[in-house]
Length: 224
Image (cartoon, rainbow, N blue to C red; front, side, top):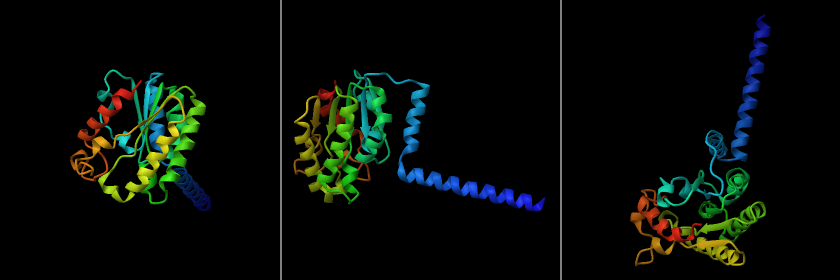
């Protein structure tokens, strides 16, 4: 009997180790999976409207408090997640963009790709192209809006690569119909050409409501 108990405990331990390993592997291979599942759970409880405007991308979208109230006449779905990069938005596009059949996709991403220190502006642009082409294939008529990579004070060393990515994306989108490049950088800079500190939280990366108010004024005319 003692041997049976030992064997059973050993089996349970092995199963637990395997399950932990699987969970860890999923977390590494599919970062932010829990956030995506949370969106899907919310959708199953309260089906989202079709033909809305989907805002997606990194934490600058995720932490935009009361996003819908900035555009009260629009139907908006907020689907920013984690500190996502462009390839991760692509990974989850078929779960957080395509199923909604939106009339417009508003994307803010790319800043984290460059700030990782692993990608150049050109490589970030190439990631953008992969995402754009995927969305365009799945949703050929959707209006696609890209918000330019913002000048975050804590990431000054990456400004030159940000500028390269922004310029390449702007030029690329100019070749396609139903696309928009929204440059929010000018309203975030002071007379000295530097980012306005008062627009940012203490981390000099994420924005305060004052920053989002400036974004909203620039974005409003572009929303369908």
